[in-house]
Amino acid sequence: MPDTATYERYRQLYVDFQTAIEHHDPEKDSRYHLKEYLKFQENEGLSRGKRGGMNMTYAAVEGGSTRDIGYGHKLKAGESYPGGLTNARVDQLLESDMTEHQGIARTRYNRRGQGFDKLSKGKQALLTDYSFLGLNEGSTGGETGLSKKIRAGLSDQDVLLEAGTYTGSSRRRRTGRKDMYQNIVNHEKGDLAIRKAFLTMEAYLKFSVGEILETRFPGLDSKKQIKEWEGELNKSKNKYESGKFKKKDLDELDRTINYMLMESIGGATK
Image 1: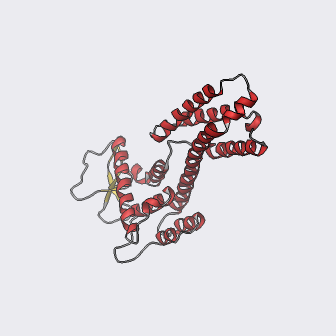
Image 2: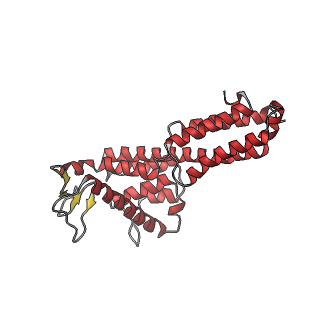
Image 3: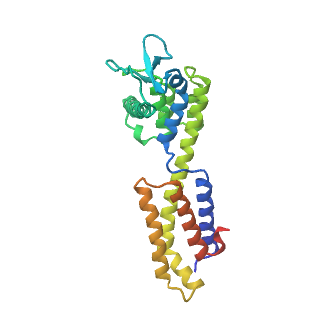
């Protein structure tokens, strides 16, 4: 029969899991937070281009003959929208620009050694934002301070300090960049907690719970009960791995784990 230390370990696991997912929304991933940040930063330009419900081109903030449309989309040669664009279309352009600038950031960062895709999602988002601002190191030098600090493996605090002090950004953008990064870090913590919960509860059902159930409930068909719990856990895990895991699914997983522990260990989750 598992001892008190085992009970406490699972109790603490559940407490940690609940803390990590308290404000976690599986659908609000790193791309979501980067997009919301960029929309907020570029909303002034979007407002300037509004004409009768459509989004028209407007003079780019950097001046000259450059024209933007929507959320800071730079018009390329031959690109013209005399009739303007709908809100849905400028949103699509932003999605396309995000993909393009992430690709640019990846290429520039990897010129000094592979590793962009191994970075945390937050650091990838910071480098992508720098690409939006045109802060891309050249082929022969000029690596940004942000890129140097990330490559050196410095702490999140040091990386954020660099990202928040770049004088080429407005105070609003520097503050927003920090908030965006923290939101992504929090999301990754929640995501890690979910993956850890799946692994731990799978091991619990396989190695620990049978003996506990047989001791506490002698007349219970423990194998049948374990099979039912495995089915519920696998259902949640399949949704998670398919990318269809939503907030309501997370709430259901929380209830499932709580029920499994309460029914087997007893007061472990109190």
